[in-house]
Amino acid sequence: MPDQPEPSQTPDPGSADADTRSRPSRRPVKAVLFDFHGTLAQVEEPREWVLKAAAACGVTLDPIRATSLADRLLTAGRAGGPLPARVPARLAELWSARDLYPHAHRGAYTGLAETVAAGIDGFADALYERVLVPEGWVPYPDTAPTLTALREAGVRVAVVSNIGFDLRPMFDTWQLSDLVDAFTLSYEVGRCKPDPGIFLRACGMLGVDPEQTLMVGDTPADAGAAAAGCAVLVLPAADPGRENGLGAVLDLALPA
Image (cartoon, rainbow, N blue to C red; front, side):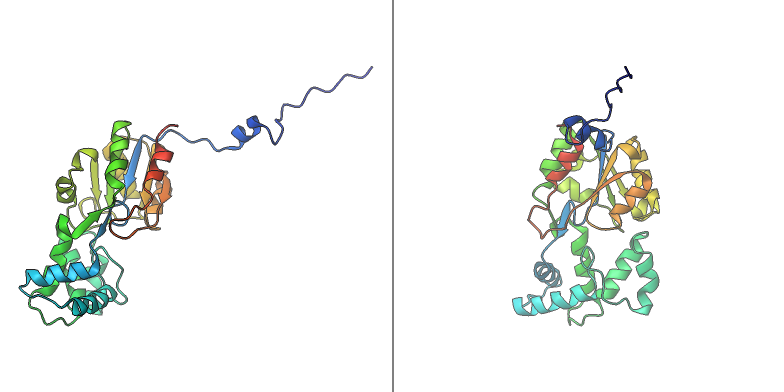
């Protein structure tokens, strides 16, 4: 009588074992890197930005005029806002270095604001000053709960941002500094996203392997972390004061 064939070791395609084996393995997340603008916080509403800057110059603007100015300034290019429709040749060098040097960041954005005739002395500088203070930003409602949950779970956190000024005062004012282990800012480390080097520096500052790190952002530049070996979650930016889905980070980073 011929030998009977051995039972197949391949699980049935519809079985639970097959489903488990088909899933890619994922190392536990020990650290999360967060982008700042559009991920943890958003700049204040544009008309409010213009009204507050004008008030700092001693000018009270009519709301309709403020709205018109805001629209033109957004087209010109706002720090923490949309990229400019066009960068004048005289600002090209500052623009290219804006996230590497504080003077270039200020010079590029005040120069862009000056292309919009507002008739207010010192207005371009006042607009820029709003981005340097916590009052010029609005943390997303789910930022504090997400950072708190990660801290309680022992997951390390870094803020990784292409920026030309210090973000630490924002987090101090919002009482979030104790929830962040490191700030990896482009102007301090000399690297800008999507360069893998900035993500590797952040991982080094946290003392974790990139393969055990999740990068969370809202732009393709943030997705550059994949080249450093990190997992990546890209979320849509939301308007100031609205949740932007940061809770999804906890689904990925914390064990079920």
